[in-house]
Image 1: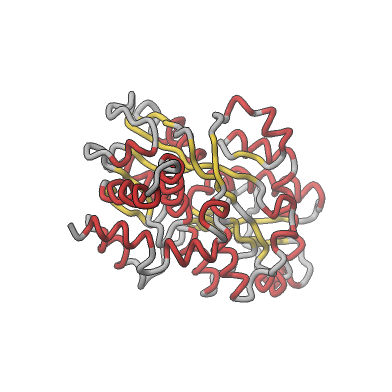
Image 2 (image 1 turned 90 degrees about the horizontal axis):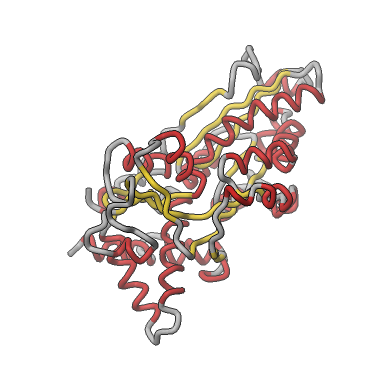
Length: 358
């Protein structure tokens, strides 16, 4: 399908929001806002998150509910999840989706909610590690036994390779995919005179090989595993291993490039919502508990790199060593990144459109 169809036809609608109630064991009732505001024992929380975090939070929610109930014996807490492309999710919250907490994979989407007055400007200092409980990186998923012999980013520009990735206009994961590939190009050509031009030429070829731009990372996974599209999927480390072990076991393999990008996953309270509902304390506990050892160990189990260095070290065999770079160190702050690379007519559009118009 054409670049134009995937990139521009999506601007008039929000992503479909999937709501998943986290386990009947959490709560058998349906708490109301009035319960929370009146100091009642029924707490109803909504976590609005990016696409491929759903598996972690599906397991984390009952873990937190158990911890919260033990600390508050008469309380019942119910947690709902909403997942989709990160930017679409942030926009949904800005447009009224009643999120108590927002758990994202990119700072710029969080900053948009700060600008809207929904998230406090000091959100980074509200929790440890600049409010980033875990990180991940971008890697590659290929067909079983790697028939195209794909070893790293440069192979994605070959004429015989078809690529699957989400849409950088709607997905934070997709923006990391683009920046990861672009940064790898700059790294490879860094000793040449025209490294920027060579990187642009490489990126045009890579983007020209993209078969489809899905709204979010999980939709891209579906295109690759269930629809059978493409030779390689650009995705996060945790999503790739989940596909290998569960969704498409025996059908795909993981390929680690030798150089990739660090993905930070910030979290924050949507105070305008929690203050109105009376759920600020519960929402704070929900996010704070992400740094407790059981949650950090759960992250490692699901191939998310925990911020707790001791837990990360204890699970070192799970994670392959990979040389990574920070997006802000290579491309500038996130406001500059969004303006220079992902705004309408910016670098991504220029590189992708040139291929689409050939």
